[in-house]
Length: 100
Image (cartoon, rainbow, N blue to C red; front, top):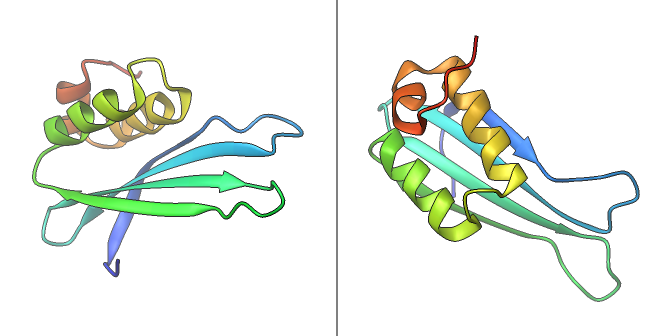
């Protein structure tokens, strides 16, 4: 996936000495689309890290997708959505979180 965009939200559930963790990155493109990238990292022998991404028209679609795939309490998704909400008022409205 090739695109040009500004990173507006990033989250991870990596811990000290983690051998597997997830990162979620949310970008806003110049065309005002939203790209959500999920990176599944692995340091296990014989297991590769994987990256996947989706393009969305609205923040509400991103919120619904992350909560569906990850569950409401997935730390990487939650951190990325909170960061995006602090940078983008549309995300703040869609996510329902108010970050001072």
